[in-house]
Image 1 (cartoon, rainbow, N blue to C red):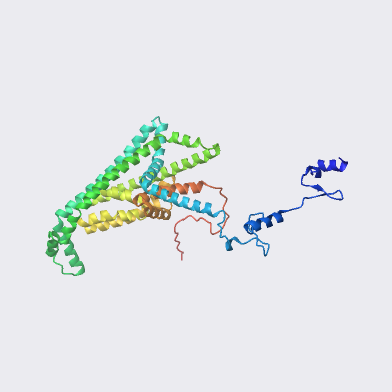
Image 2: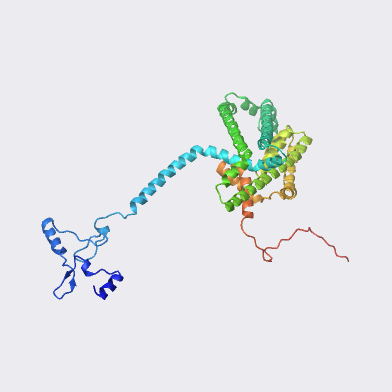
Length: 440
C-alpha cells in the first residue's frame, strides 16, 4: 500500500480494493459496475405491465413531466395528522360529556363544600384565638358552630312566628281589614266600591280567593319536603366545616408537604389573607347587623309595632347581605306590618330607615370596617347581583366574602410605586363649608 493509500485510510475514505462492486478498467483505473436496473425494470414491465416510478419520498412520478403527482388529484390520501386529530377530537368530546354529567350529579355536593369553605374562613380566626388560650380546636370549633346555629334558629323561629301570627290575624280579622281598606280607597280616590260585596267575594267558597287558598295545600307539602332537605344540607355543611376547621393545621401541613419551600410560603400567605380578610369582613358585617337590629328594635318598641324583635332581626341581617339597598328592601316588611295598624307609624318607619341608612354609610361602616377591610358599595352591590345570578340567594350571600377575599389578594399582589403629583390624583379632604360675612 502506498503512502497515498495510507493517507486515504487515515482520512476515513474506503479503498477501492475493499469494495467488491468496483472493477478494474482497461487502463488500470477502477470503475463502478454497470447499472442494469433499467433492463430489469423493462423485463418486469414486459411480464406484469408498467411499474410506476417513485421518488425517495414514495411519491409516484409522472413519466411525461418527471415530477411527482399531486395527491389531491390522484389518490386522495388523507394527511398523516388527520387520523390522530380526529381521534383526539372525539376523545375530548366524550370526556367533556362525561365531565358535564359528573358535574351535574355532584353540583349539590360542590355547592355544600363551597359554603363550608367560606364558613371555615369566617370562624377560623375565632377558633385560633380560643386555641391560643388553651382550648382544643375541636371544642372551640364546636362551640362557635353551635353559637352560629343557635343564632340562625332564633332568627328563623322569630321570623316564622311573625309571619304565622300575621297570617292568622289577617285571616281572623279579614272583614275588618277589607272594610277599612275599601273605605280608604273610596275616600282617597273618590270611588264607590261597596265593602260588603268585597267581603262576600272573599268569603265565597266558590270564589277566586278561596280557590286560591285551597290550591296552596300542595305547596305546603312541597314546602315541608324542601325544609327537610334544607335541614339535611345544613347539617352536612356544619359537618364539613367542623372537620375543615378542627383539622386545619393538619390539612395545611399535608398540602405544603407536596410543595417547595418557596411555594409553601405563597400558599400559607394566601391562606392567611383569605382567613383574616374574610373572617374580619363577616365579623364587621355581623356587628353592623347587630347595631341595625338594636336601633330598629328601639323604634318598633316605641311605636308599639307587633313582634318588634323579629322585625328588627329581619332588617338587621338582611340589610348586611345586600349592602346599600338591602335596608330599603328589608324595610318593606315592617312598613307593611305597621301600615295595618297606623299609616302614620308606617311613614315614621320609612323615614327612620332612610335616615339610618345614611348614618350607617357615612359614619358607622367606615369606622367599623377600617380595621378589617372596606368594600366599595358599588363593588359589593354588583357582586351580590352576580352571585344571585349564578347560585341564587346563596350566591348573593357568598359573593360578598368572595369579593372581599379577592380584593385583599389583588391588593397585596405585585409591587407598588409612588404616584406622581398631578391634579387628577390629588386627594382633597373635606373641611366643611365656611361662610364669611363682609363688614360694612
